[in-house]
Length: 128
Image (cartoon, rainbow, N blue to C red; front, side):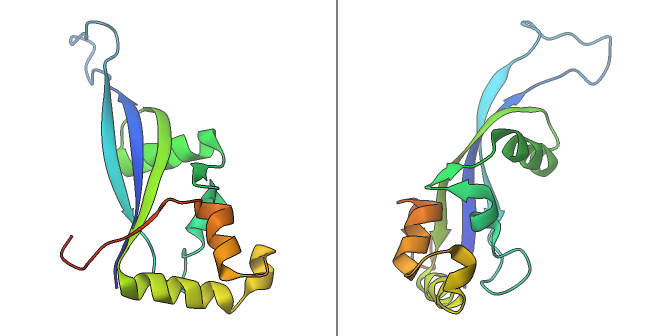
């Protein structure tokens, strides 16, 4: 069972020593980063509920802080791209959501997925 969150981040390069300069003072690059999605029902599995809203990062400052922790470089912007899951993860995610719809303030699993992930779920086969 595999799931991962995929984000796009714009990072800023900074010189580690005063003798090193960058022209211009900062450079930007776009980094695609993936974060393992905890197994549904385990600690941290509600990351999507606590961080995303309709397939977008809910709180930009918080997301930048998380990305800076993951990348260990300054992050200027971060955006959510998708939750990539295999069939087993997707089935377990839907089952875990169904077990506690009240926690999501929703009546159906589909409503929860739409509310927090929008259309940003991609089911991939095990080889991808």
